[in-house]
Image 1 (cartoon, rainbow over the protein chains, first blue to last red):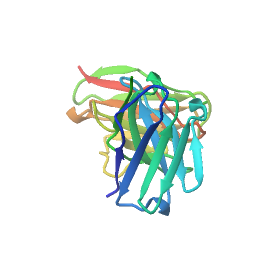
Image 2 (cartoon, chains in turn red, purple):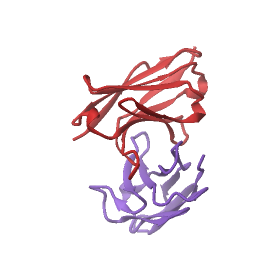
Image 3 (cartoon, one colour):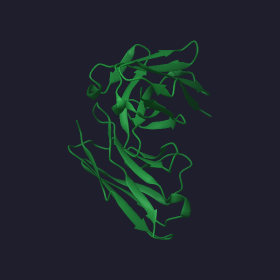
Image 4 (cartoon, rainbow over the protein chains, first blue to last red):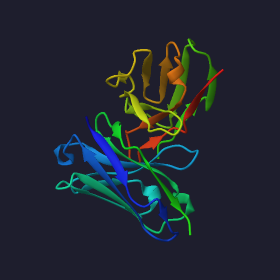
Length: 119
Length: 107
């Protein structure tokens, strides 16, 4: 059974960097699939942040170059860094397994990590 | 960006009802369309991928249809555990985008 779990600070100050890690069990992240980050502001819809597989990354242009994704196959984890955060970045952040290309769906998700941006 | 528009935004129905939720894409996306169910405070769960393929373990009362720009998710006979928010999602073009969600409530 594939399982994902987000970890990282739940509170980040404005203008600082949000950093989250997703630990994966039950599947080797280097074996295939892309690994995605998706967020959901309180009471709102889902927004795709980006996906990563080895050295290949895909980002949502709306985040204007503030995002960096990486993965570490030795620890079976992948990570998100979002710089210069503001209150608009307050959201539940989910990591997910993404079948890039066909079919393109996200079949396994982490439990989500609420990150609040506030001073 | 491809805009995904769901209708209705909210829907009240009773146990046993047949309900249909619509998702429209702002341009053709083939069948790169997926549906998720999200219960309050919980994680989105993949129900249907590629417009019409049921994810493993999902009850057969759920079905999906469509291609191009117009898609539907149908629940043939609502069960108490189906009251949730449903999201459509396109993976045809980056940035991948989601609909705004349809909240299905008990009448």
